[in-house]
Structure formats: C-alpha cells, structure tokens
Image (cartoon, rainbow, N blue to C red; front, side, top):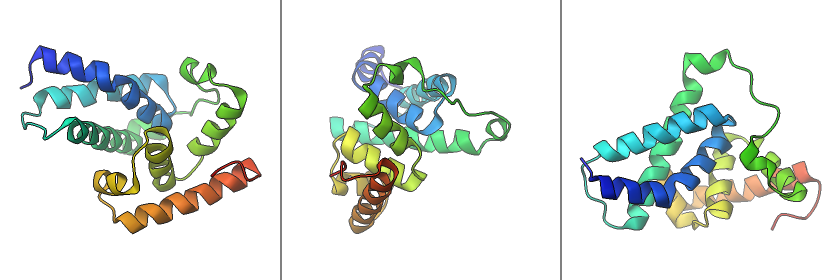
Length: 160
C-alpha cells in the first residue's frame, strides 16, 4: 500500500489529466468523479514500484481508460441519457476550441484515444503504442485516420 504522501503527490500531479480523459469518454461529470476515485483507489492498493514518473503516468492512463470502458459497458449505463451540454469544465473553453473538442468527442473510441493522448497530453506514437498495447504503425494509422475524420467534421484544413 502506498503512503499518504505518495498518494497526495499523485493526486496533485495527475487528477486533472485523469478527469479530462474520463470526461472525454464518459461525457458526464458524476461518472468522471466516480472513475477518478476508483483510479486512485487502485493506485493506493497497487504495491508494485514504478520505474519512473512516466511509467506511473502511463499506468494511471491505462487504468483510467480501462475503467471508463468498463463503466460504459455496464448495465447501468445502457438506460441513461447522455448530456447534451458540456459540463462547467468545458464551458470555459473558447468557441473554436469547443468545436474541436466536440468533434474529438464524436470520434469513434479507437481514434478518440490516440488523438487525445497525442494532441492533448503530448505523447508520441511510440509511447501511445506502449500504453494502449498496439503496434506503433497502428497508432500512426489511427492518428492519420482520426485527423481525416476530424477534418471532415470540421469542414476544412484546420487540423494539422
């Protein structure tokens, strides 16, 4: 079990990132907070030492993505209505950023994950491939296809 100091430091470093990932997938503030708590509970109970901060961050991202997928598959989610309006967190974003965010949110999950990790979290294709357990070339393909889909959704050449 991890010390209170380790847990507090991890929460300070990674809570915002985990919230963004959860909200990207779940589009619901309450579910986002539930998964955030569960991620850090798993972190507290995970007794294996991490090799580095990047290893720790990658582990937290992987756990977050898995918990989001599990929640989306659960029976409780099948009878819910998705929110039409983004939460207060996304409301402070500029209109053009909001348009891009909405386009990213509407992508299929396989594209949404790699686009988010690459453009919002700054990971390379190699790092994403290790986190998502996919081949590096597959990540490049998903990024390329995801960008094409975003370009179509946004109706222009605004995506690099």
